[in-house]
Length: 335
Image (tube, rainbow, N blue to C red; front, side, top):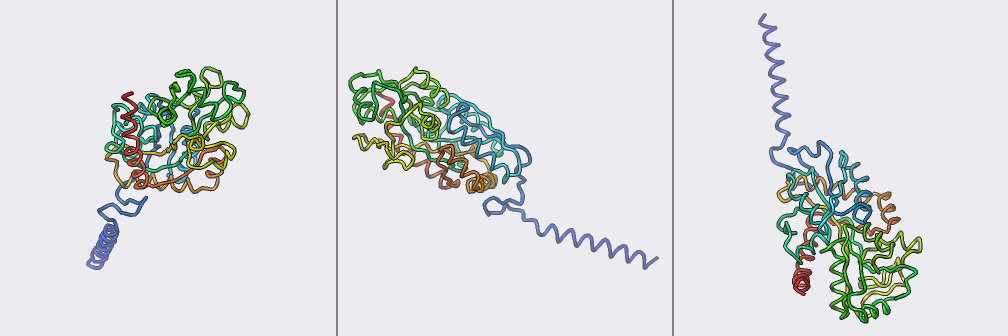
């Protein structure tokens, strides 16, 4: 009997020691390594990513390509949800009002920043946002229909606007977007009065453009690539420092005497107070996706210039855009 009790006691002690040793290996504080956390289990269910623009635009297309690859590295599905309106404000606001648990994130573009510099918005682009990553940086450009006769190049485009105040109509993806801002800056720099016409996304503006309801569109290369390929549109000028390699025959605005350099930066963000560990896990999944050769090839095919920046770097870009556009936005909004 004593032998059996001793054996039983020995077994119990061995189990207790084993459990204690196992517990000792579990840290009680989060790991500071990016993408790793020992005490936050994330994600345990699908993640919703709000695209704050209508379906069919460059942001929507690029996001759907990205999420297809990122969910492989995240380990859960990423459900894309389009919530358009207000030049991205409606969708961004819905995302920022969601619980800060990483399960609702959203697109956060240059448009989401610039609109706050031109009017009172439901959020502050720095104080209320947790940056995750930048995924695309797409130069802004102006396109006209290929069969347009009123103007055929950058010089005649500007000349028509100068001779016909408020008659040159240019479509945008919404009020406060970088496309809208590019028109206002062009007007100021060139001394003209082109008329911005706002739509609920790039898809809507392209439909109105092709239907002859507006004269031109202020979009990005990726958003007009399909129309360039099928011969229905042509670009008159690009808002870049130097000519785009993809459009070697198209002049920059600077070449025609207009100081206009604007890109559409597109990223992903989360509500303020989302734990850093969760931000890092999401950022790591998107980073891996951005380096996937198949993703890179697919983005190039769609004319979307992929560019990844992590949370800290993307946050600096958001702050830089806000500081650059604030004086411009305030001045133009008062005109």
